[in-house]
Image 1 (tube, one colour):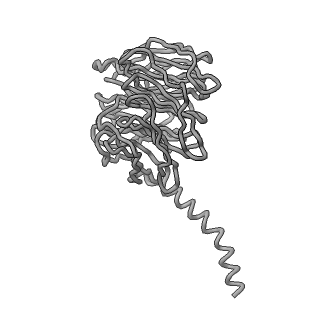
Image 2: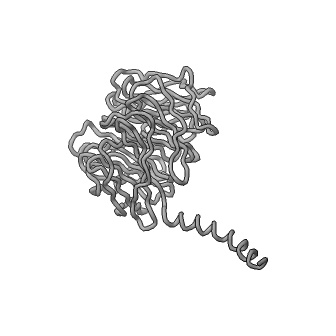
Image 3: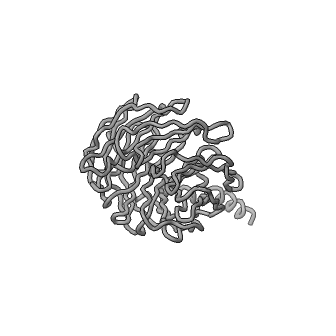
Length: 362
């Protein structure tokens, strides 16, 4: 009897690691998008080791979407440790916070804000900021990682400047001490330095190198890269590179560089800062760019997307896969990223509802 118990006890520590290993081999990573429906929800999809996407749940935000395109990038964002997921509710003017668990998402808080029609948000340290398209403003919160709650930052509400500027995205720089916003209608790049309370301080503005600046992503050396739809001119899309200086001022490094496609609207970079990709919605294509050390851009290729009218992009944490979201055929596609920026299709899942917005991967 005692020998039997000893044998079982010795076996138990071996079972748990095998179970965890089996799970990690079954599911590689999870992609999240936002339904933006009247009853808004986050939709999850898992990529398994066999290279297939599978639905992994729908999680109500408690807020409302608009049911229509937002002309945005950044509707979803993770906390720095990826234990929390933040989502905008453009129809109810608030932000939802989810705790990320192994078996799904848990809604822990929903916070209102004074702005109108939030379209993009960004997270750094214990700060969360949103940009609002309805009143051309930004607003910030303090985030408590213990409770998962957001607390409004008093005096953080700022107007971008011009009415009808058409903000598309807001993002912290990689240090989390400055904010950048693209203005589609105003054809401007705007930045704000933050004071020691996390409040917007000095504002800087630079005319965009190309018209209709849209999505952007940071790379290395305080560089960031912006897609420019050029008002939808046929084959007129461009991409430009900028540097954000410590004082918050902006400098053009390269651009506007031709994409040779129509309406480059969404942009993602690899974690190593060597590649950038644009989703060219009307052209139904994805373009790849090499990024030089000093921010110079070189078009590598533009390939037809497996998805119809791709309208957002996200890169996996290891830089090995590119995810593409489409409202054209309501799908998510996954591509393997080659060292030279070449994209190889892995899988395609077309069971999404119309109106989806935002795309993040963990």
